[in-house]
Length: 323
Image (cartoon, rainbow, N blue to C red):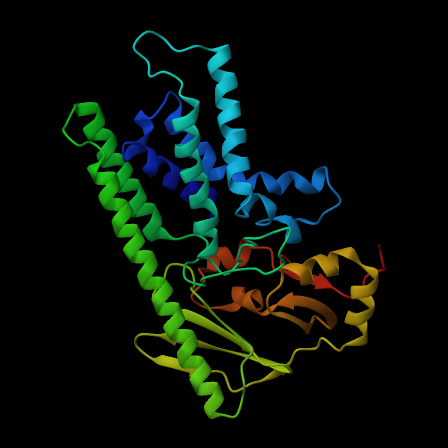
């Protein structure tokens, strides 16, 4: 999920009333809601690739209290350097930690809702979890979160009773929206699984991906032990399966050689839930079904298709070998 959404989610928690728990509680909510993404700088200091490390340990269950503790420690240091004025809330480390921990927990939860997935038990477990319910940038989130925060801020400033009520209502609305999308994706995946079995195909994995803006539609990706295919699902047309079926390509000698010789290929495979080998411009490329040809979808705005990097989830397999 984008960091604007994470920041708004943290701010909403604070405006519900938790910002009164301690000095810097609102800052703890916003910083904590973004803290797990500190892993994006890990490749600068550790021998890891971002594709394998992002949404790993710092997003895992054991990492949540660590992220909250680090955030509180930073705020404690600021409190020592710049003590509060008379009338300010006192710095309460215990309540601040609990509030910040709740904000930190919203981060992997929101990320889990997207198709990119989260490794909840990294590094002990290698499985990636995803609800396949919400696109990584969602306009409904922005509207609901923004309105809830704005209305609560007005009530706090105006001295109204129960000023956190608008934020609380916005939180409930958002949870209902999330639950509906999780259920809709699950329904789309069950429908596709039944259709494939009627055709004599036993699916090993099915992913329903929400496109940008049209949260009620789903781009469908399926794979068996040997082949993969695609389709779409929407309330108006139901399930539409593309007739073409393609080999996974994971027995390609070029892929097998690259996997043995190049760390980036192994890192990609550690993260990828639906790896395939395809030809792009006459070159062999390792990619992931969830994001293969996603920029060719007409539902993606033309401005995004022109500017988005097409090679983001593509690993060329014909490059010189590197460890």
